[in-house]
Structures are given as C-alpha cells and as structure tokens.
Length: 486
Ligand SMILES: Cc1cc2nc3c(=O)[nH]c(=O)nc-3n(C[C@H](O)[C@H](O)[C@H](O)COP(=O)(O)OP(=O)(O)OC[C@H]3O[C@@H](n4cnc5c(N)ncnc54)[C@H](O)[C@@H]3O)c2cc1C
Image (cartoon, rainbow, N blue to C red; front, side, top):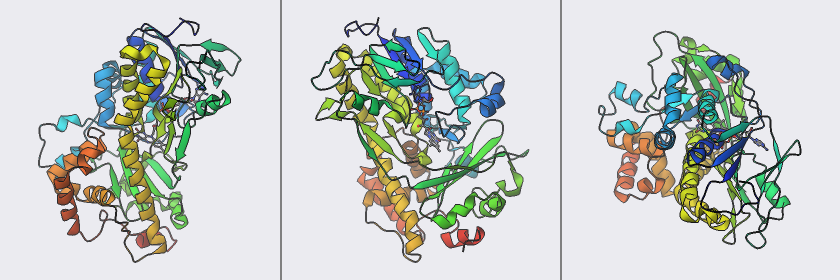
C-alpha cells in the first residue's frame, strides 16, 4: 500500500525515521500487528564480533550519548515482557540479565528482606550499544520490518490536506533524493529530530517547542571490578549531595560506570573532570570510594553537556500541527538523564502508538493524531512535568551554595520538599524504600505519591529530624579542596 491509498482499518505502510531504542520498538510491534514497516536510519548497522566490537567499533554519530551509561528501568522490562518478549530472550542470550535495584538494600539488611512485589523491579545498567544490538537483532528478524541504513531523511513530501491549514505528510524524501511513500511516518529521530523544522517548511504552525535551561554537566568513567568486587552493589543507583549528584551503573563484563553530575554554572567544580584527581574525588563519596584503588579505570572521563529537557507539542489550537506523522520518544520529549527515564518513556510511547493504531478510528489521520496526543498527555506527560520541576529545583539548589555558602536552599515548594526528603530518608524505612523504587522505576505515576497526604506528612516528618537535606557526603567546600579549587 502506498500513500495514494486512503486511510482505513487495515494494514498500512509505516515509515519510521530513526533506529534508536524507540524507533526499533514500534517497528517490531506494528509489523507483528500486520503492518509493513520500513525503518530509515542514517548510521551504520551494528558490527559483528560480539560485545567488545559493539562497544568499540559501532559508530553512532546520530546518538551523542551512545557511550554514556544507560540504566534500563523496570518500566523497560514491563513493556518488553508485555509487547516484545523476544527482546528479553535476546538480552538473556547476550548474557544481559537484569538485577534488582533493591539488591544492595537486601544485602545490607535495610530493605527488611525480600517482600512479595519486589519482583516488579527488574533493572540493569547496560553499555547502550549492546541493548541497541539486541533490539536490532529482533527487528531484523521480524517479518514485515525492513531496516535501511545509511539513509538520511531530508524532507517530508506533502500529500492531500486532511485538516484545513495543516499539512498532510505522504512519506519521506531521503538525502539521495529518493521519495518513499507511506501511510504513516513515525518520527523517532531523537532529541535533535529535524521533523519539526520539516513540518514548518510545509507550512505547519508548529510543533511548539519548550526547552528547559541546559544546566548540568556529567563526568563519567567506567571501571572494571577486580575479583571479589562484582557483588558489591550500591544501596541505590543514584545519590544526591550538596553540589553533586552521582549515578552508579553496573554493566556487563564486570563493568561499572560512575557519573558525577554538577551544575554548569559551578565553574570551580569543572576541575572534577581532571583524571589525575580521580581517586581523590572518588574517596569523598561513601558509595563510590571503593573504586578508588580497587577498580581498574577502563575509559577516560567522558564529559556530557547539553542535557536539557525539551518538549515538542504537536497540537496547536486543539488540532494536530500536521497529519500523517507522529513523534515518539526523544523526538517528542527528552528528560534529564539523571533518572535514566529516556528509554523507558520511549518504549512506553511505542506501546501507546501500537494501542492507538489498534483503535477503531486509526484510519482517520486527524483522529489518530488527537487520540495519540491525548494518550501521550495522560500517560507520559505527568512524568515529564514532575521530573522537570525536580530538575529546576535541584539545579537551583546546586547553584545556591555558590552564592550563599551558609544558607540552605528552601524554595517553599511542598512537592519538591517531599521528593527531596523521600530521596534522603528512603534507606531508613523499608516501606518508603519501595514507594521510592516504584516512582523511580516509572511503575507508579508521580501523582500517586505526591497526591497521598498521609505519605507526604510521614516523609516530611521524618525529614525534620535530619540535620542535612542531602545524603551524608562531601560538602561543596570539601569538594573544592579535593579538586584544588578551594
Ligand atoms: C548522557 C545521557 C545519559 C542517558 N542515560 C540514560 C539512562 O541511563 N537510561 C535511559 O533510559 N535513558 C538515558 N538517556 C536518554 C536516552 O539516551 C534517550 O532517551 C534514548 O536514546 C531515546 O531513544 P530514541 O530512539 O527516541 O532516540 P535516539 O536514541 O536519539 O535515536 C534516534 C535515531 O534517529 C537517527 N536519526 C536522526 N535523524 C535522522 C534522519 N534525519 N534520518 C535518519 N535517521 C535519523 C539517529 O541516527 C538515531 O539512530 C540518556 C541520555 C543522555 C544524554
């Protein structure tokens, strides 16, 4: 079926722009539902040669964060098990088996021991190219999916208008000048997706883009665990201190990454990226200190900036900015990577797209765009907004001691106070630990916790008895002294 066909409740030709985690997922799901799917990807295919070749030889110019650590949250495994169980099998075949974020807490005894329901939390850190290769292997063997590499989409050809004043997209035009027609184009081109610009070139009044300030810098290093360290799991993957947050991510092959996240405005702390300071900095952080000396560094310190949250609204005045095209994953919205939610949101979005295309009015491009937009708003946007608010406060809190070394950051926002306190007290109470895990895992919507007055009172009450608002660890002054900038 080409773009000349009318939309109807039968198999379509779906064109997916981008073979990242989000793009490959609807490709598999929609092909399994009987659609013909073509994925166009500007980068090369994964190399053969196993895990190390994937890690060192796969050039992913289209994905700047490809070598940065990726946590796959329980929401990823929930979607995979429900929608694409063959990817779980592929991950097992590749020996990428999930652990549980509560493992460290179980070992230390603070979880109150394993409880019914803890199995909801499968999670793993992964070298991202390996996860992508697992998805790729499944996509390539799914009947109905064609993946074309080194094929860049340059423009969107317009078809017959379905909504007055809003262009209808009839397929894509590649950099080689080839027009490929489709009934539906899925924009999975990532955080720098060109589709918004291409739609505006066709006369669309959007999408309207909102961008948060890009305020964080991340410094990451991978270590290989020496014998005996493999089971040394941290109590929780992320921790927040006065001027720094850390993320500790286990990966395959006894690797672990440690990331320090600082405010871009805190110029003095940029010295943390100097490799010769590595051990002096690591030793200050209780959860990471064991890597100083005992872990073998296997990469340089990888720096990442430009991690802003961004959202593209595809509805203007209640109408889709264009029909025949839907944006998913990072092309729709990016969230700050501190919480490792990007892949989860992309996979949840892919599942929403599948459900929308199974609905009765999927054959009507306007109805499809509206239904998909509503589902996105209802299911995904609360997480995006909630995280956005957290990030704004966290950044302001990190910047605060630079200008006011003696005063605490207290903006008087109860939701923020609750989230911050829950982060600090969760390791003291087995129930709160699981509440925090369900929220961080994207298994419970944020309104479920912040909207529970008894829970909020209990957490804030526990917080009142703590001296410092963050986990025990280095103050900014101690950090500055360690990096020689005090
Ligand atoms: C530093 C950092 C750390 C992160 N850590 C985590 C984490 O721990 N856990 C987590 O879940 N998420 C994390 N994320 C977010 C995660 O990387 C993204 O959410 C995820 O990559 C989104 O997948 P995607 O498929 O939507 O987009 P992408 O992965 O960006 O894929 C887009 C694809 O489209 C292709 N493409 C782009 N333009 C074109 C074109 N014109 N024609 C053809 N192809 C095109 C690109 O080559 C690319 O393959 C992190 C992000 C950053 C920046």
